[in-house]
Length: 485
Image (cartoon, rainbow, N blue to C red; front, side):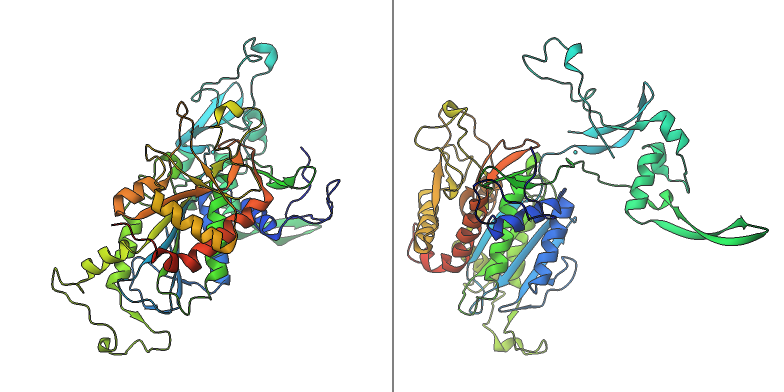
């Protein structure tokens, strides 16, 4: 497959194409290529948030929050939460939340990765310089029928040959990590992280000695690392009409990007907004979300509760203004103005959109799809429904989102899995249960989920952004018209 569009060159159009792909799709491809790991995805998100005027908060420090203010914080460098306070927000009002995740299936370097076999330096990886060669089909008579491999012994990347590594050894400094990992790997990391020292070295020039500055990359400054491997082929746009995005990590950087851009695009239109709008991009969804930076932690409910306990000032107010200028909050348990009561009231005025990529219909495997629910690329974001509550969508939450989409003329589709099929899960169900918050599961359609070369449609990036923009702007109004106690 030859890339037609990447972030570095946009001059060539496919046959039959009369214009460039949508700007939203091009922006997403740039985001993908800058985000090979959850840490990079968060950094890419932070760069965009700060360009839009968002201020960084620390979970360790005090928060000084203003109406119409834009804020974000990170956790572990792999999860980011951003929020905008409505101009008419009062404590106890609702939250308009979108949740997605930054991680994708990958191989990761083990704590002790150092291995050598048959003259090759190998690196142990966990189920993401490195290459994993397969066995030539000539040696495996069963490979023509089905490709299988042992995850422990046959999924080991090759770093170098031992002979070539010995010839090129230029180790400077010692790290206890070199007992666990190959020195060549540690040196590469030292170079990439710029852990270096410049020193003078005498060198003979003609009949005299001169000082020559030499750079030493210091491995002893590396104490530990969390290293993800990723495919070196960049995300690209292709197809006869430049209609597809080919890349790994579409699940779930696709919906992370749509969530982020919807927040940024609407962040300055909150003069009459009664809610707090929020985007939470979690790590570790692909391994169950049970971590300090995952959706199954206390991160989201604790953040929402903290905002209830935080005095929200008007943008023009001084930080020294008397608290009596603001609505009185009772500290008496059970009072209707006690923060705990206000928090519970706020949750029941709120909704969570769980945004995780969906499955597009595959023309070669039609029998895997329920015949009336076959989402197509380019035809809108998918509302996901499951009777077993693998997805948290309910009739009221589906109605709210469909009404929002109708008012903005944004296309949406619906998906249910076959009765005899398997259904994936998202952060929606766990957060819905943990917080008793209304939730709807959505996602843009894609093919080959969890493969190294996934496929999605260029138009659906805009569909996803448009839908979530509409959600942020219209949810308080539509929600007030749908009451189910």
